[in-house]
Length: 339
Image (cartoon, rainbow, N blue to C red; front, top):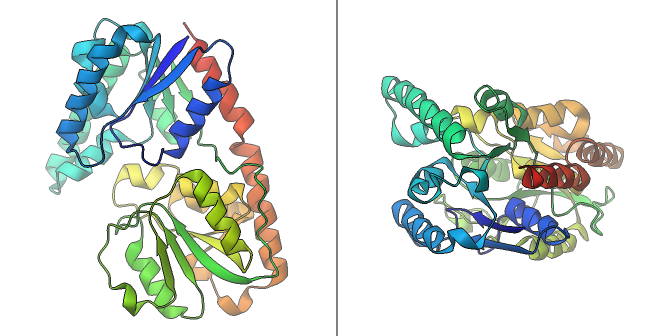
């Protein structure tokens, strides 16, 4: 079987979930080829999707299955895939009716109307033009399964599972943020936290899309987005001096942000890094299960070696129970093999 991934997002470096899926399928004997079509970073949304349409038209007969990310991309590719339903697996990582409506409209009436329209469009596209659907959260599965009997829940799994890494509870603590640094992802709160805890080092690893003067934050160290291999090397260096707490403060500004799993949370768990988070549902569940601390409850003078160790061990336990590579691998293979 020949498999091609299609994403409207640039892959330099590769998105961890797509990279994991590609690596798993490359190892399977029934798969003879795995590749990906993706646009350049600088292109607009329209230009990106037009590029994908052109490339898919050129390569449609070279593959047996296409795994397509993003509702808008699925829509743009209709002229090519409209009679190729058996080839199409649609993978959903966001609650798109809410995500797109939030981006398009601030007026509540228009927002609600947009959600209804995009839900109808999503339902139509899935039933008419896809063979299988992969979702990454239970809440998303509950919604999508109401109009697709072929929906499958496959949670994110971390590329850091079982890597040689130790979050040493004897070290002094530091804070880590991984991912796109924006207002919606809690940038303002993180900067305020760094001001209040000037003796704690903050590491921000990812693209920064929030304006601030780094010179005013002497305890913040930034590094741009890097691939998972280089990220692990960076984290190993940090762990030589510090016990790491992972920051997860995504704001529930729209329904998609409110309900979706955050990849960073699962990466933190896989490395035994406890979460410093808020009450956003997916993050709060992990904190309630003993793998982190609410930001409002965090007190530096109450952090001790035993507390660090307990939180770290619990993080690893939760990861192995719900997000392990083995669970992810088998579900993915079953979907791809399905006729």
